[in-house]
Length: 99
Image 1 (tube, helix red, strand yellow):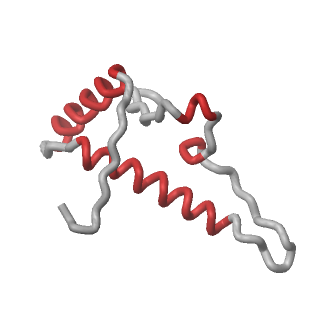
Image 2 (spheres, rainbow, N blue to C red):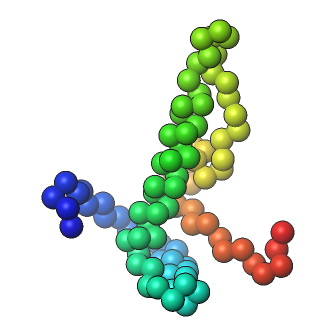
Image 3 (cartoon, rainbow, N blue to C red):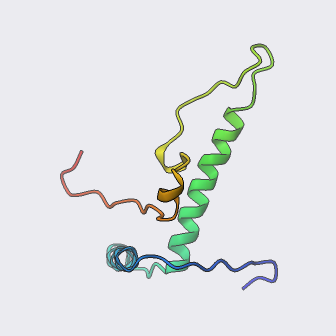
C-alpha cells in the first residue's frame, strides 16, 4: 500500500454484500482473473468521479451566454434524497437477451 493512501471503512447491508460477492465470483469465472472487492469498489468510485468531473466541466458558464450549458446528468451521479444516499446503488448485471 502506498504511503499517500487513506482508508475508507463503512458498513453495508448483508444483501448488498452478498450481491457484490456473487458479482465478484461471476466476473472471476468470466475473465479467468480474480476480481477483488478493492478493485471492484475503486473501479466504481473512479467511474462515477470521472463522470461527475466531466459534467462539472460541461457546467462551466458559457461566457457569451452567461449560464451553464447543461446536459442531462446520468442517474449514477444524480444527487439522491438523504434517505436513499445511505444505501449505495450497485449496477445490475444485464440479463441475457435484454435490450
